[in-house]
Image (cartoon, rainbow, N blue to C red; front, side, top):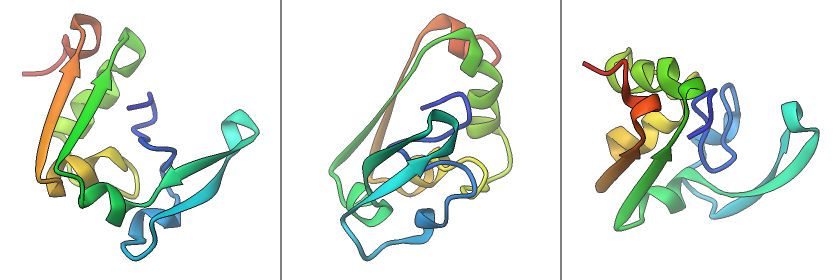
Length: 101
């Protein structure tokens, strides 16, 4: 998970978060000025397991809003997979997890 709650190159306000039909596509990452290849939500949600790795102090407030905040995957794309994935596991370091209740 990125500090902006993106995952798999699916960024906030990215319309692809609604795509449950396709498998993969390219997406332009404006903040990084580059194109990336990503799996689309339908492909990710069909996975048996979904794992998230979150490290660093820069992600702690975002992680708290993802886990404890209002569900809005258009703003926090990672929520889609956390809430709708089959088996989801989070791997967090202390810095990222320190604000969770």
